[in-house]
Image (cartoon, rainbow, N blue to C red; front, side, top):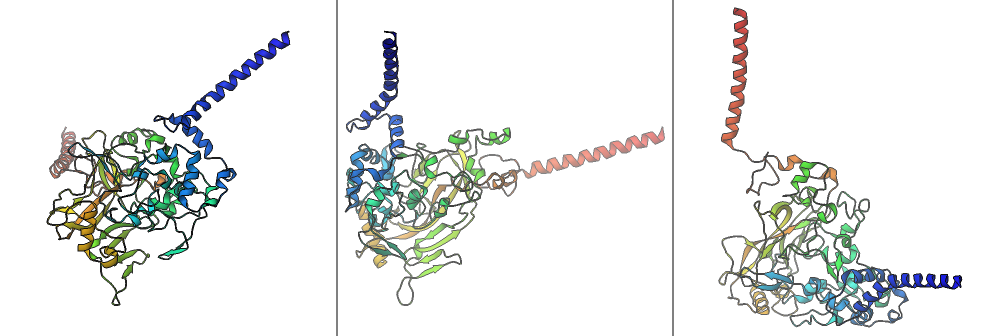
Length: 535
């Protein structure tokens, strides 16, 4: 009888333990598979997803088939990951926009989709070329359906085979047959192979778009480039193979496919940002004086003394010179001694720099942007984005910035920036017929804005805060780099900086006082000597 009671108690304990372990899982799975639910318990789902990401996808029966189109593979993915489509379509990687509050207080959608930049200028009417970096298939024009989940490109982020590439002018699609673009050959993907080699995003997945933004390696950002996948710690201590061995997703953590981090040049509000303090705290130094500096100085300011450490980055782009050709009418291309293109018939003149010292600005995490159709002051440099902040702004810090400067097309009569139609096989595309007037007319029509029929070129600037290429401690800035007459912070004049700032009057007064003290000492000493000799 005693044995029966003991066995029953053991069974009850084991059953209770089983329930305690499995119940949270069961609840999470119910939520996870509820396609109608609006709210999903994030921590439970992320835990499940982390587990799923480690499974061997080659074992799934649904992935044993040959896929004819990338959409067929997406449908297979979504049949298991049945919340992923909804999650992805809420992200800025899919929408290419975020909430933006205008000066009048209205909230609009603004982002890569509809912003003016001073690299390739704008997306509208140029979609097939620009959207080769979109996480979708088939965005060819303004009619793209952002609600169709089968057009999500799952594998551009999750391919671990290293074989998947989108075609540069394919509106997000890979090629269906072998095709050449420039000097590179693109091959049709083996979707079955790729589907069975799936995992969390690698640096190569992220870099497929972000390393080559603006038209080539390290062109746009200056601090993220192809070589970041295999570097030493002198280039970046975090990503270095002999340093932190970190990946992009170690900092850019994700919930519901919303990737942490916002591109400063486009994002307008201080939301979804990533900061050094998330790992290093707000007082990371042993030295108390250095910790006091972190109140007004971003970590990057001292720890990224230069950027573009391996590949050069584009610093200036002059569109006004585009359209010159060789004597035989062929495309004219000029390169510098390092192989960087400094002139191209289709794009104009460029300047490049390596080991660039950043410029420095106050930044509180918020930014303003030029909106299509806004009037510009034609007597000044047009600020396509402006980082907000000042010394008196308690939330602002000094940050290192790449400033990209350009000469680009605008309408001198309407006093607005022009979004030109650059890419296409039609007769109005600038890269086809090199007619700025036709390109301006088609481009502005695509965004439903007027064009006067007149165009000119104006100077513009864009600001890109630097966050990568963190140097080892021995290569960080020293006190004298800022606290000196030739300080790196010369353009920040709204505060007093010891060692940099001075007053000629006060310097002269101080020098005079020192001289008078010496004279007083000499007189005093002389009188004592004279007195002792007499008496």
